[in-house]
Amino acid sequence: MFPASTSTEHGESLMTEIPLANLAESATDISSPPQDESAVPVKKIWALFFGSLAWFPLFFVLGWFDTATELIPRHVGIDQACLVIAPVLGLLAGALGIYLTKKLTIRQRIVLPLVIMFEVSLGAFVVANRASSIVEGWLDFPHGKTHTRQGLIRISRAYQTHGKNSSQYIQTMPIWSNLEIAPEDFVFMQNNRQPGDDGRNPDNISSRGYFCAKVTVEESAKAVRILHAGSQKLPQGTVMVCPVPGRAP
Image 1 (cartoon, rainbow, N blue to C red):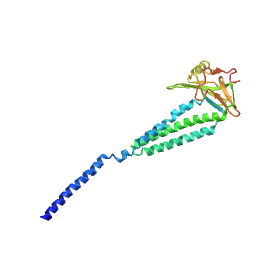
Image 2: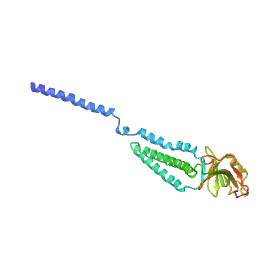
Image 3: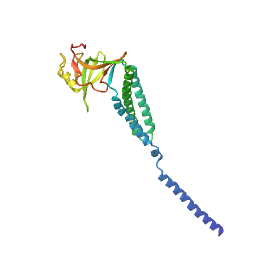
Image 4: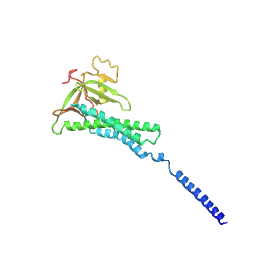
């Protein structure tokens, strides 16, 4: 009888140990979140997304300091550098977006990095371009080594854009620049078109030197710029018919 008792005791021991072990293992599996979901860095993805948008508030803040348009020199090399740096930063941001979204769906992995790449590329370009314009002004027009004067600059054409906020612009000659003007000045040009301009296009006005802009010019030893321009519109009353059509005094 002792062997039988021993066999029953061992059987009960096995019946109690094995189910308890399986139950503990199952409970662990249910309570733990899936590995893929827990590995998604949601906070980092949001930080990258909102960080890519931060360029645009910075662009508008810099606009408070961008109050002139430089005519000479042109600084073409710096402009080209901005065109190169911006897409490179966009590609890096897009690559980081692909890495952070590797646990998401295929659609999310395509759309989010593309949006981030576009935002960073555009934002970096406009910020770099405006910041370089401000720095160029500091370097080319040192304090105490410049002088200002009133002058006339010829206008080659004027145009206006439509949208949420319509804007009016003039383009100058022979040195090209694109300057925003007051709506009243654009209406003045519409009502006083040069002879031969039939005025069929209300959004585009041909001037070719017929109109002039009265502006404040600042000059240094090697540079010339127009003040009260840049990211700002020129004061109302800037546009006039040139005293001698086609020739600015």
